[in-house]
Image 1 (cartoon, rainbow, N blue to C red):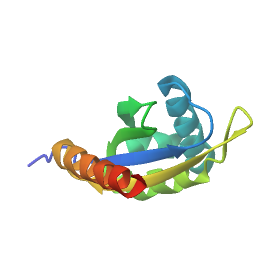
Image 2: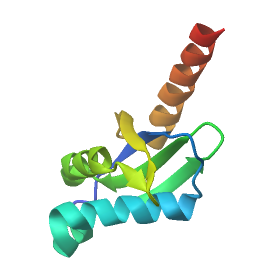
Image 3: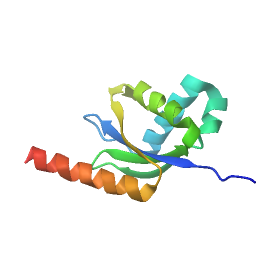
Length: 116
């Protein structure tokens, strides 16, 4: 019996003084994975961008469940985009997109209340 691919969804916070378009964000993430794990490691991740919000500075990406650790370490290794200091942080991981969005909205609301 053939099993389908199991995905994991990761919410990534982009911390920087500058804003970056989604294609530059994704290109940076792909370069980080290929730099650490090579093209073979990159091909095993099945990495794709689901959502990117420049205003709230977060992204939702999808990857294979077996490559979550590869993606997390690659996310943590990013320090610059075009010589501008940046910090990517994995905030949440979930097995479904619906649950991730629910948890992310709760976390963003909680953050807004603490700032007020």
